[in-house]
Amino acid sequence: MIRELRTLGRHALIYGSGFLLARAAGFLLVPLYTRFLTPADYGVIELLDLTGFFLATFAALGMEQAVMKFYHAFDTPADRHRVISTAVIFACLSGLVLVAVLLPLCGLFAQLVLGSRRYEGLFRIAFVTLFVTSLLSLLKVTLRAQQRSVLFTSTSSVQVVVAIALNIVFVAVLRLGPVGIYYSTLASSSLVAAYLVWQIFPETGAHLDIAKLKRMLGYGVYFVPAGLASFVLNWTDRYFLRAYSTMDEIGLYALGYKISMIVVLLVAVPFNQIWHSYLFELEKQANAKEVYARVATYFVLALTAVALGIAMLSREIVVVMAAPAFAGASLVVPVVSAAMVFFCVDNVFQVGLLLKGQSNRLSSARWIAAGVNVALNWLLIPFYGMMGAAVATLLSFMCSAVLILRQAQQAYPVPFEYRRYAHVAAAAGLTYAVSLVLPPSPTWLAIASKAAAWLLFPGLLLVSGFMLAEERAAVVRLFRDGLRGMPGGPQEGMGPGIAGGPGQ
Image (cartoon, rainbow, N blue to C red; front, side, top):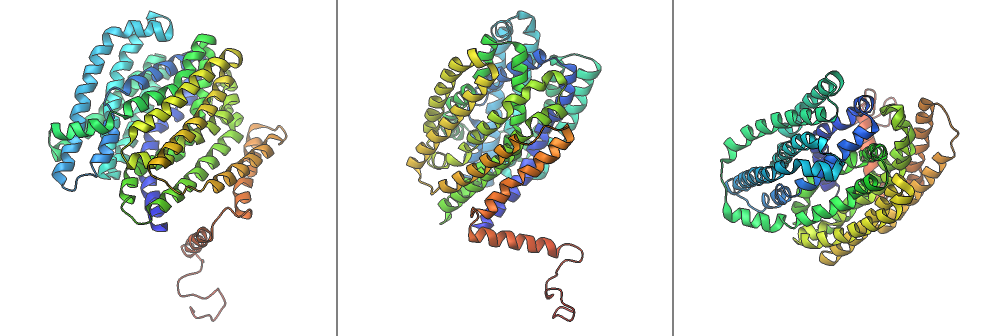
């Protein structure tokens, strides 16, 4: 089992680093955005992005998920090449049709979403950007399926560098405001997408295999309603805030949500880059269920550790990253960070549904949770604003995780380690409670004291019996191997350091 976990960890690190590079620009540019944009501008960008996210669900009709499944369903290179080329060609055609339909409706979208037709031009550039970014996302999925980690990481690095440079030009120098962000995204994404098409198609050829397309759509199309449910579950609170609050509060909530998303980017994103492909390979092993369960435990542990750190340092992160006008964003970070843990555990809980091809049941579970989210937003946001939105997010994400777990266990029971989940939650809760009683202090001293307090979390797990015997042995071996690699550390063939020992 340790071998499988090491393989998963190595691949997650490689592909996750590339994806994190692609996403890093959004966080690296927060100080720039918050100093050249107002909270209201930030709210406009948030609503535009969310509208694009909603429409992107219809751009490729589940082709990303279908590629990850059907690439490994065939053994011959010719069939695998046809899977990739069919998916990319279909995504191009469906994306172009979608944009052609949307462009004449830009004025209507501007009025409905932002309350004014003066944003029509912003929607126009956003819709074109939507087509390019959706295609680029699929192209990167094909690299993950082919395990071309070098190309994946290098192109992601180029995309980040170009995006940051263009954002500085358009936002800080030319002062174009929100539209400058879309110009930079469109340019950097177009550059990388064009390069990947040039790299991929000479190898795969341009084939639109109708038989394979039907099978891929038959599997992937069920992810469309699941994606729509995820949109309702994750993002409708912004539209409720638009109706019951101000654009400024949407901007503050959007920043707090973005900071909480660090949990997703540092843990779930690297993990998902390989997991959604690797889980199908693991199914063939005799101990597959035990591996799924143990991976889930470590995943929950990693998610909780990062979410705890973000929650404890929420005020300090906002102070360091953003302008003073955005200070209120820190209020929602602890609640939304906890919500992200429940949002991400879907990735390991849904294994049974993915293995059995029952993605329709995944959709039904998410729609129920989405309905809970809408009801909670309607009840809480008019009275509590963005804090009501944060609480609604936490409760509905918990509902989603429980429902998906229940559905997946019916399809393919996995012996998940629920007692250890409770162990992690108790240690995290106690550690967070300790951080709340720390005395107020200057920012950098607060960061140091809370970082030190965070160490209570692994300490509690270590002394309270969380680790299994085999895990302790693996940690000891890892520590011993690390010491051997250090100058002056114990080497193979040497005794315990006593002069005249067998190694001397």
